[in-house]
Amino acid sequence: MEDHKWRYPQSFLAWTQKKLQECVEVIKKSEKQTRQCYLEKIDLNSDEFITVVLLDGAFIIELFLLNHFPEKRAYSHFLFMYVRRDMSLMENQLPFFVLESLYNFAFGSQLTVLPSLLELAYDFFSSGVNLKAEGVRIFDSNVNHLLDALRLWYLPATQDAQGDGWKKVEAIPRASHLRAAGVKFRMSETNCLLDIKFSEGVLYIPCLKLFSVTESFLWNITDFEQSYYKHDSYFIDYVSFLGNLINTRADAKLLIKKRIIDIENWLGHDETLAKDAKALANLFNNFGKESRFWTRNINFCSLRQNLKAYYRSHWH
Image (cartoon, rainbow, N blue to C red; front, side, top):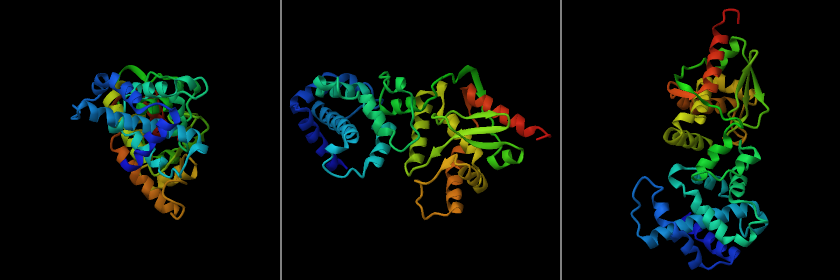
């Protein structure tokens, strides 16, 4: 991968018609600020640090451009899915101001006709996944890095998760038990993955498309929230909620049949429903273990309370 990476800066310089030393100066201007963005001390001298940042920055920007302009690709980019996974890892983040400075410098005269860097990033990450943000938030440059932007794009249009205080999250019954109590499961038509509703005995859940990298992404983005967004958790509550619902193969089968979980691109077409359901149950069992925690997300708290109240009703 490192060898492959070196091709991109060469292509980047050819595309931008900028000199290498000019790009080096752009990175060098913000070296001190960039170093301060990392918790651990980076044991590289100035030249080594600038080389790494420039290499990664040019690689990311070139990747975004080749994704947006596929006609300019000189060879097959079969590795896009795996690169998306690696670029969303917490430990692989470059400060966004570094990427933006390099992009603006390299394409300054073309910025009126080219998409913004965040638009290119959104285009790259949204290919084939559950990412459908509203236009206004795609252009919000007040993000620390790409993972921060990725989380922002998944959030509901109305962000009112924070309540007045912390509430303890209690586990809810699993999907097959809720169905036995009369709860109906429906795939929601909303564009927001986190917009789960319960109304008049019907639980509306947006479709989650599973890919080979989904598990890694969910663990990574919940770890990110745990570290930086404890007071404003969305994904932590989301994966915990699904972890409660999907406890056994019966629960998994129910959500697969209702098209709430799409496994078409996950394990391959040669798998049977039984094997898929077992794998899905195992996946979310791990998330379900994290179900007892404290949160300020009033939406998920109310959702859980309403489901439990419905389930406890003797009539149901």
